[in-house]
Length: 318
Image (cartoon, rainbow, N blue to C red; front, side, top):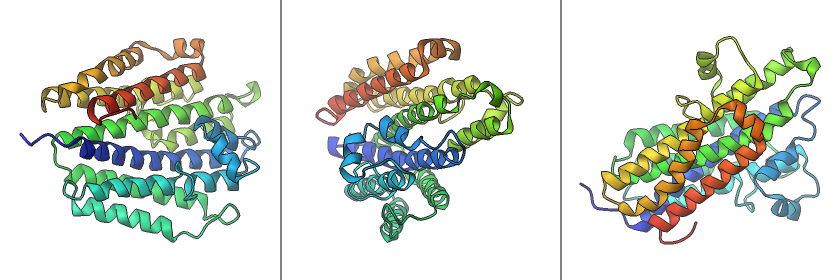
């Protein structure tokens, strides 16, 4: 068995995974918002992204209005905003620099290439690249990173920390994507079943690369409740909240049992409570409770899991 990782290396692996997952999901969030902003209900949707990321104070320091240009620059290419794609990739690269003895040359080289491409983009609030093309390329870069990592990362405890970071971030970002779009897409009675209504739900599924997987589960029915249920509760779709939380639980158990890192027991309570809640929920009870309220409570529980990880393994709070 390999030697236990130093806490600082485990933390770097965990956050490298989170930052790369966050970059991809930010690209997905901006892309899907740009798609929906093309119709009459999307004109005022850009402030929803800021609200769900709790970034109003930071945004107002730089911009007076939540326009498409301001919001997309803020979340994609603003080097002064720590939550932008540019900044998250930069931070992933800095963590990877610390991890040079642990990661493959291919991982390091590809991360450098992504970062250098972002640095080369000349952009500002009034000068942006084509958003659809930018987001598509970024998603491909992040998926290539995932593929290189899958194929080259040694399967010791570092791999478990990577998986926990990736799936915690993915679960959080999936809840945000559903929250930002679910109520905006609830159709008026005249729109139900219309080509516009169906195209919007198609676009939401495609934003998480879930359209074809959804059609495997529901070949003939595309409804708000079924799409939300698929993205929150499906146990086979790798971007659903339930699946991601289950993978966090499984990898945490690996750290505790296989690699004998028992401090993770502190994390098992919040992750198991959330996992059981998702296992026992159905979409009807979630809608009755309130979609936003349910997703907000899941985000709070994910934050507690992240804090417990910091206390247990990284030497402090998140």
